[in-house]
Amino acid sequence: MALTEQNNISIAQIVIFTPSLFLAILLSIRHGFGRSSGWLFLIIFSLARLIGAALQLATISDPTNIGLHIGAITLQNIGLSPLIMVQLALIGRTLGSIRKSTTSLVTEKRVHLIHLVTIVGLILSSIGGSDSGSDFEKTGTYQVSSLTRAGTGLMIAAYILLVIATIVVATQLSAVEPGEKRLVLAVGLSLPFILIRLAYAAEAVYGNNKSFSQLTGDVNIQLGMAVIMEIIVVAICEGIGMTLKKLPKGRAAGPPEADSYQQHWNQTEADHELGGYK
Image (tube, rainbow, N blue to C red; front, side, top):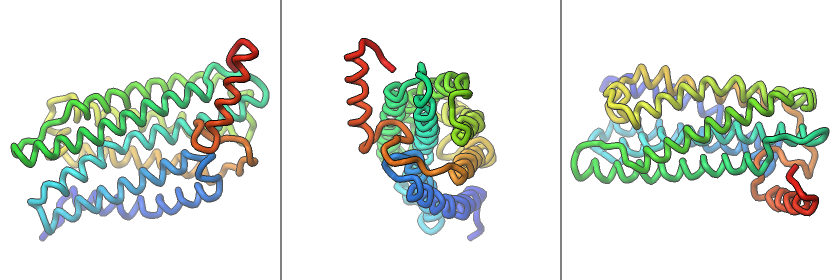
């Protein structure tokens, strides 16, 4: 059986995201899983792309298996959230550098709120994809779930907030340590490509153009607006990540996660006592 263009894209994703996964694991080991959660999100993203590609290739031998098709589509939909969370983690690390000499309008608490918006969007998109799959099995027609639309809407909101945060942080670039300024560069370079990827997702979810259909859309559009954009963003982040120095113990690199949340909460309480926020 001859391979389709979609099959070729899936093979290319496996070839590219396999080394990307190992590099993300290396970065997590080097910088720490807890403090550098951005690299953990790259692991999640690479796994999503590898599993999604594997599911798509599995349809070659079992083309009538609806679960394989829906699984691949769902994993395609949730790919945006890890990419946005990587950028938030990089912004969070930059804030740690800025705090050494001054304050910022963008605080870790506000970055964490954007992070939560992204997570909720991820959850809604995942549930929506599952619902669409169940309906497709019953009716034979694929319809985008309202939950998927809501999840994509939250991704758009998170992206807008990310852009605003990046602009604010960029205006304080002089307060960022020399070795950390490249973090802002990485986010700034990634944002246009994430925007194109987001536009593809928005058209697929909200539009009526069959070329953007998640099930039977134009694979060339998918390749140009989704796959290649994701590869570029991952390359930028991992490339910059390899040049970063390891942070000292006790300094958080991203939004307050498990190992830094309590420290962040304690700092917030101290700021309240002083009558303001940092």
